[in-house]
Image (tube, rainbow, N blue to C red):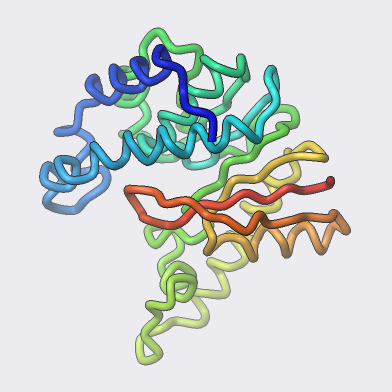
Length: 229
């Protein structure tokens, strides 16, 4: 892993200091948001910065990255890509309340969060970040519970699951279609099947790296998949 430059770490720290955690709390938690961020803020910054160093070794300068469902956890990655690799990043987040909070904290940085569907992004990207999106329990409650082995066989709704699975298939396909070949996909371990299934259907070779890396908010381990190599 390549350590991040001091200027990058300073920018990350400044942004985390500028985030309005009081306003962010209710977006992430139905209750106890202040306590949540008091506990998770430090690990989120630290683990995100560590992961940014790992990602840095896998990306080429001057490329383009598409971030699907980007939030506070992705801040160190976005800062690293733009400051150290001169890359263009497109950060999409459907939580309309969160986007202005993130943009205010990132004022002066060469990127901006957009409250839009990532499938609307224009062009192709040599790096796709799609982490804890296709198994998001808020968007896909039945699918998410099955992915994380929390499904209750008594209350599980197979009809709702079928609808959610179709929606997740469409989201995965719509985003992966924008991935350049060869390219890199960063995703959670739970979401690997969505990526590999799409590649298999398209006849595109893919290789899942053996190692995974911890995250702080959802706590889904993250891994890297090389596609079209």
